[in-house]
Image (cartoon, rainbow, N blue to C red):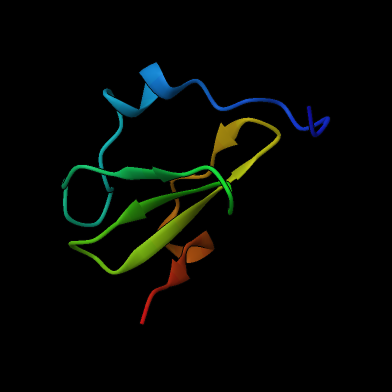
Length: 60
């Protein structure tokens, strides 16, 4: 166990990208929710997804 709070994968079913309303995928290694449609990665901090476009990382 890494000591980080776990992200509840069931929450993923209820969350969508705030930019495109598209489905998200979970990247457990990087602790991010990925929006392929918007090419953004939303961080998960202390088990809480930060669903703000300004906080998202742009994907190549």
